[in-house]
Image (cartoon, rainbow, N blue to C red; front, side, top):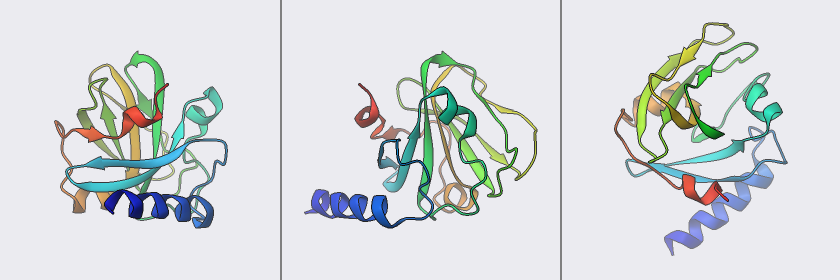
Length: 146
């Protein structure tokens, strides 16, 4: 029953959410510490470069998952990004290695302290209210992998 509810919720969000802006990316759910977050993916060079730039809002339980071809030191910035975001840097074992809270409309680089395979941008308030911390496991990333 829980799976059916998640599928219906996913379909509704895909078609009804104004905060999901890239119709070519994949959409789905990730889970961290029992909390669900609905994500769209960024994996092409253009998607990775643009991220959540120019968006005026992001659903309270929504985010963007950046998928890198190879592990790397990932850096994010907030140029033309109007939403206060947190970025979770995630290793290839789907474990959060570090979290950075980013200020809107700045060009300050926020970088991982280790090689990562993924980054997840979400509302700052979501990370803080759910008490998400480094070493938490992220479930569901493998759904987006080939």
